[in-house]
Image: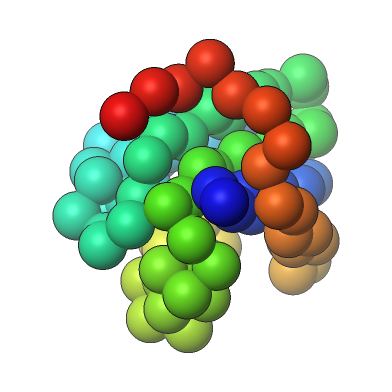
Length: 98
């Protein structure tokens, strides 16, 4: 069963474009190097953002949560407010194959 992490970000005023650039230049390349990573979708609506990552399994997502994720939070610290809210889910259906 695939696994998903949803991360809810509150972006600092006027920092949405910088947030998007950091997602493209730092977050996604880091995710691609993680064992078990499948895909990422980042959604931005003004000061709100949602990052949805899909993983092969819970173990891979949990490993990332304790290793790569804290480092990325540090890189995003200048553009986000407070600690992002993280939710996890079992993936019931997806169009991603393989």
